[in-house]
Image (cartoon, rainbow over all chains, first blue to last red; front, side):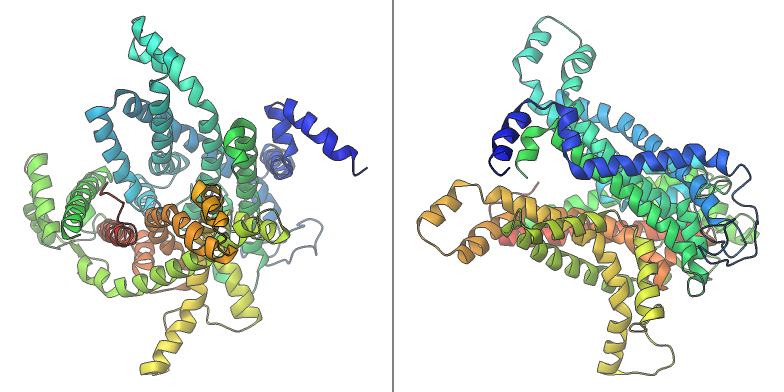
Length: 292
Length: 322
């Protein structure tokens, strides 16, 4: 046994593709399983709990694991915690995904322009990015949502507006190093427009670090979303995990379960996304990951 | 060094002005008349006060003059008046600032020192069980919602174990003075500072570990080994010192997140700082106070960044002003 393992392992690792590399990462697989479960919960919520999660279904403060009808107990208003958790999964996932996509839409073009054009454009764009990095992002997000009035879209906008700077910096750095490559120089010589060169030659080569960053950004966005909802800045029509923790805060001495379960789910989902991000990093940037 | 500080302060002032301009446009983003927004919630202020605000901020003038009037008032440290709390915003913030500085400062020191300690420990024992445990813990803290871990800490340490107080700045009415009062405040500080610092500790652990592993592969470390220096000396003097530079940069950049996180911590622990003030302003939709806290916390981040840069420069004279 002891002799066959070291002999077989290098041969197998040398040929592995990105998918195999990702699956070889035990953390990434665990993360993927948790994420699939959360997505399933979000999709099944309207089927398993078709009535509104805001409805009173039992007497208040039913402890968990006591009544079969409400397996995780009820909150201070007699609402079913399990139903709230299922419906809240969708809000977290949607806000995390859409706000990250919006942040990429702001960050990638700015970073590409700064890195490719250089000079004054680069200076101006980097100063602008620096400004947004200096501002306390959570405080800015609070101000934005409060001023725009709490809703799903204002929350997405606020999170996107505070999370694009790292994308710009990453893309700028990648583009800076790609700009001097021969194939980009060749494209310039053949007279292609800046837009075409960026779209066809430069940006496709920055894709894998962007994918890794994006998966980590979704995790951060979910943390931001739950923090905003906790402060009462969530969409008043949608049950979310952060709101549930915030609502249970005042009765925490009598009923730990109202805050404990939703918080645990936020933790697991964010952890899962971070693990997936690390797995993607190992799979897509093998040179970088060997350093660690 | 003096020239460096002067240039750095100049840069900070430019950024602060830009933030004030951003603030100006945020007020105009709010629904309704800017004068009413600045007076508190719509309908809250009386006619004469609204007219006075209109005059002061040149709201009947074109936008550039409005911006000029707003900048003038901010430069004069006038952040407006909170109708809700019946006090000038600057006074309200001034009263609450020391508590926030104490909280964020303590959380910063705890998280940076523990983070560097654990991170270097993990790097030294890379691949062992200790390393796995530390990086696993860091991964867990990195994903933990700040407001939730604070609540769980209250359940465990205040409700179940009854070791530490769960809210407030000091015991009200206890009448402690001198050292007794300091100890009382310190006891109240433990839970907020620890929970606020957890996330940042995780960040610094990961950063220190990867930075140390990177430096330990460089040639001068091989030279140090070849010279026959002891492992402890190599780790401390050659690897850690060089690995700390990116960690300090990151720590400076994290200041904004730390100040933002204080809003959550102070809300949960009823800590009387500007984060809690921001939450109160939020509940009352007191936009003027909300934006005032935002400007002051941004200024706090700038000062913090300035201090890290100066420390950085003192530690490593190779650094040029960015």
